[in-house]
Picture 1 (cartoon, rainbow, N blue to C red):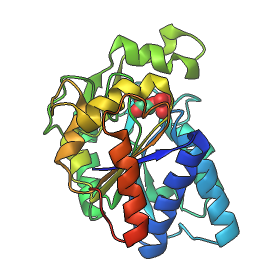
Picture 2: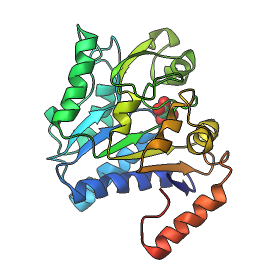
Picture 3: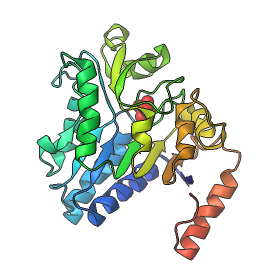
Picture 4: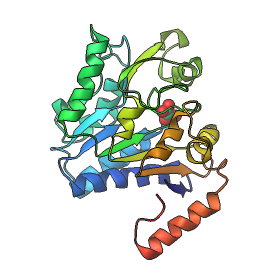
Length: 263
Ligand code: PGA
C-alpha cells in the first residue's frame, strides 16, 4: 500500500485529480470507478480544471459509480446520479450514456445489481477506482461486517452513516435506509485503487485501513490485499498512523529514485 500524506485537503484533491488525469491521458478509453460524498468534490473541481486547461478529453472514458440510494429516482436532488452530473459529468466532454450509476429505484433491485456487475465486466473492468472512506471504515456502502468477497448488492445503512450523510438532505428522516453498492470483491477487482480521506474524523478509519488487522469489521482494511492501492490523506486524517514517518520517507525515496516504491 502506498500512503501519501499531504498538507491539507486541497493538496489531497490536487493529487487525486492528477492521478485520474494521468490515467485518462495514458489510456483515453479508461474505465474509471467514481465516488460521491464530500471528499471527492475538490478532486472533481481540479479534474474539471485540468480538462479545461490541458484539453484532456474524457470523450472515450466510461465511468461506474460505487453506489446509489435505494428508492431515489435518478433526478432526485439527493441522488448520486444528480451529484455526479452536477459535480463532474456536466463539466466534461463525456457522453452521459458512458456514465453508469446504479439505478436506485429499479423495480427489481436484485436484477439491477447483477446487471451492474455485468456492465462493469463488459466494459473490461475498472482501471482506476476512486474511493472515500466512512468514519466507521466503510468503502462505498460496504458497512462493517460486509463480506470481503461481496459483489454489488443492496446493503442496509448503519445509523452512523445515515447521520454522517444527513447534511446532504433536508432532514434525517429523508436519508434512505439502504443503498445499492458495489461489493468489496467488486472494488478489489479494480486494477488500481485511489482512496482519499481528509480530517480528524477519518484518522481512526485510516489507521485501521493501513495498519490494522485485515477484518470485515473495518472494510477498508481489505485494501491491504490489493497490489496497487494508494491512500492519499491530509495531516489530520494521517494523525493516527503509527508509521507516518516511514510513509513520508518512502515518498521522498520514490521521488529520488523515480520508481514506484511503497506498495
Ligand atoms: P465523505 O464520505 O467523503 O462525505 O466523508 C466518504 C464515505 O462515506 O465514503
